[in-house]
Image 1: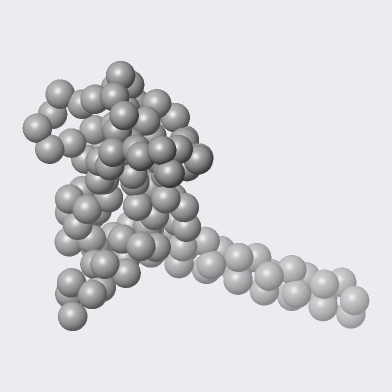
Image 2: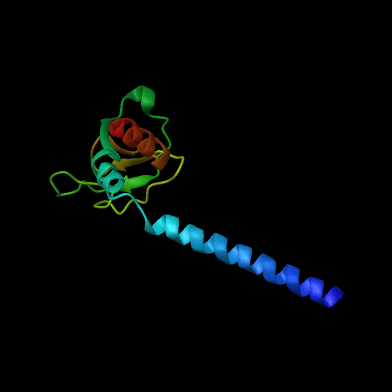
Length: 113
């Protein structure tokens, strides 16, 4: 009796974790193409560094892109969920600011409504 109960519980748990994993993959594969375009256009901004902002934590240093309107993809940057990223541009007093996915979603949803 204990063996049967253990087997049933084990089977139930494995089906739950399988369905959760399947659900997660489905969510990731159904990304809104409009949101992807919005991110390409709005994730980056170039700002001049003033002495007051000199304390901003930089995530690294990048070389200025030769592309006319570069996106985060041109710089090989991965967007982070809850963290804006700042990269200095080599040889200048400018910084590339990369918005977080959270802020981009907020802007995209406001644009849609």
